[in-house]
Length: 160
Ligand code: SME
Image (cartoon, rainbow, N blue to C red; front, side):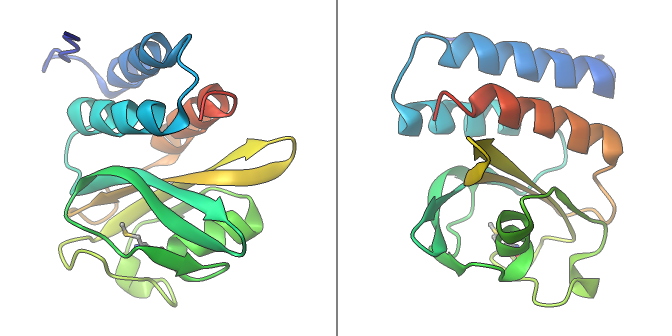
């Protein structure tokens, strides 16, 4: 049994630190990428407040295909360059979207989503996966969240 339980009194920076430590601990020594993505989706869900979706899309051919996640059932396939996720994959760059309704081509998997953070995971210079976080609150994510998720992406690069 794993017992990762964030303390509700932790600051945002502390929560990020604990999330990274927990993700490192739970994926260390495990070579199965699906298992690691599943556990990390669960950790993100547990450690980061005010989310309505947290998970992964995998780059398969010229599109993104749904991976392990927490939240409502979501779009299965996203075209390269489409939506926030496809844009992050095509640009190999983090997308921090304060208002999803203002993002051209945003794909609404859950109508409750108001802001979104998408971070690519790169291996050998290629995007292999994207991490997607959605929140029901506008402007839920900031550059501190982006940096923490980019650290998480770097950690996972060789473990998924
Ligand atoms: N909103 C995303 C689609 C994925 S869901 O949020 C889970 C997008 O525009 O790419």
